[in-house]
Image (cartoon, rainbow, N blue to C red; front, side):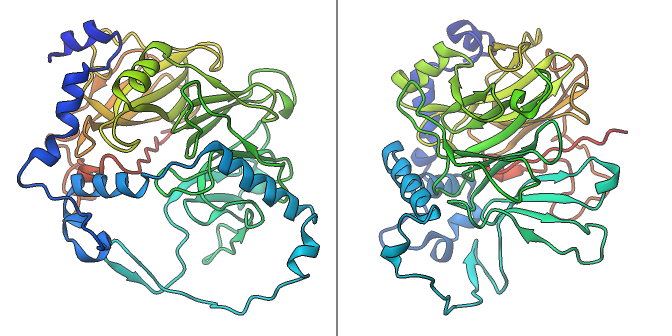
Length: 419
């Protein structure tokens, strides 16, 4: 299908069902492709296809995440955990327990035996913007939760875990509120299934946290399990209770208009969301937010098979702090062409007119391009990053700007220098 045909059939982007099905199974129809999952195998250890084939890694991830966590099970775990935290079950566990070990472990992952502690990928870095707190930095990790240091400029900063007493240390997203003492935290890493889809709030610099708020199921019955991005709008009111919290999840976009006290599902494109949920048998997720001169942007991906596989992204804009959304106009169709997969948005400073987007291709097996907008994200120009564009510090692994390459379906981070 051409770009024009795609837009004509389903508005902003969504391919026809037949086209989607063909693309979805192309990898397994290809004789050169073999699934890394064999009966009784550990794919990370026994099958080289896991390390060499992007399609193999996606298939492995799909299988790993095949068991969906129901909202009822998650809520039950939260309720029991809250009882234990409040001391209601203290008599049942027989008093205090003492850890007997092990005190250190090694971990085998991606073909490497790591003889050190590993908190996982860095999800969010939050430096305290106050000059008097220049040495205070928060770091959210995928498996180790939120950490804080007050001596960041030291040769070896001291880091303190701040979320070990929460229900899970799976880091999804985190953001400051209108002051750096207010932190909104989403539990649920995008790639490691756990007790996720949960929001917390701290008003004292991560020293204590509010009760857990489990995000409700979306209109199609899918309960959020993974937090993909968290961003805050402080344009309303004057206190942190007026903060507007935008949360991107694997079940869609959630919004709080009361400083994180309650959250509700917000349809970004109700028709396309319903089409993918009810006709295609897939779903949608909101991967990345950016505050620009045009308002808020969100990159929403529509998927099938699994939420990390065959994602087709559309960028939407909101002029009312995330209450309602519409596809960006993008007159040339450069970014909303139907060929983009997972897309990360970034600005140097919230409210900037210059915006950048890093996109995978639709299957997620390769980098598509880097795009730039000079009008707040309403119209975009491709920068041709894959074609001969070289970094200032090339090496054997990245001689060009094809940075995400074969793992374009995986974790992205894009940072813009204010200068």
